[in-house]
Length: 67
View 1 (cartoon, rainbow, N blue to C red):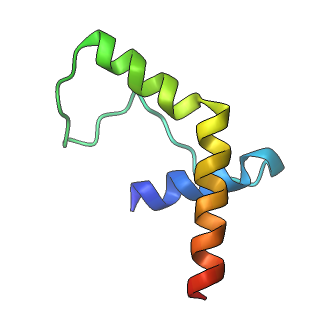
View 2 (cartoon, rainbow, N blue to C red):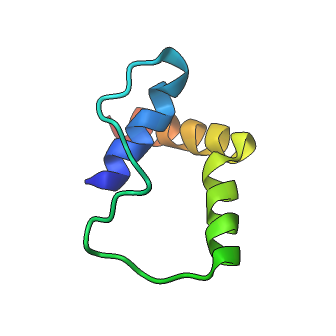
């Protein structure tokens, strides 16, 4: 469910109509310990504009083809 919310927010981020606030500092109880270096790499991947636009385009294409 969190993945869907995050993807939805990524798609509409530019329009400013996200359906929920996501706080990456709040633990959900299902934590996996990772090194600081891996955490930085993950954060870069999440905030990478190129990756964001590719994921957005893939999601739109998937929805378009399966609607």
